[in-house]
Image: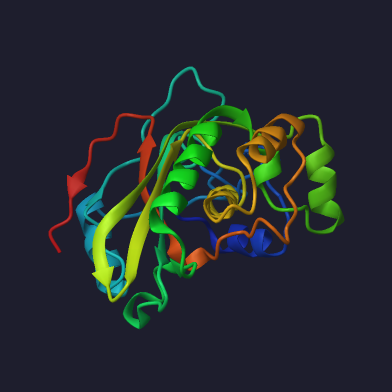
Length: 264
């Protein structure tokens, strides 16, 4: 995964904490944290140079981080030409690949409980076949507004009604397959979804929809209707999958980057 880091002055840091934008001459990226570095003419009131080599920055971050994070390489942010905004790891993500793991069976494996959603005892073959049928409907370019959560609060409802709200996503593939894992009568299924962009909680909603289809709670016709109408399926039938089964596997980022390995 790629993360972007930059250093800002104490005054700029305090301003961002207070929600202020006191540097009108410094451009920023709409919808992203202010201030954001743009080019060599950035305001020195906002930003300070990082007086260290790339490898030394990576070494220091690894020494300061816990064991669940490891930095392999560091590089200057790519220079972009002919673009409206400077490089940003989320805005310039071409493809994202998520994977979700569920388990079926009478008893959930307690060792796997924090990484897998256990959905209970099912007819394994029929369950998998129905999920794969649902995946074929969901794959491709659609407006996935129906597969994002109900708006929370007035601000979210207002944002959904704005003319520039975009629910269109292109899912290049949805692969649902049984794994080799076995424990007692419990087995696991992975759902791997690759797309150009995703709405908030969309992957978990797609997983919940696939599971509901697998147990026969919804039909392919209902899924197709939701894609066309944009109306969400009933929440008492389609559950948003819990977060603990979800992993972001890979992000393809647009931009040439010359990485310097970190020897730590």
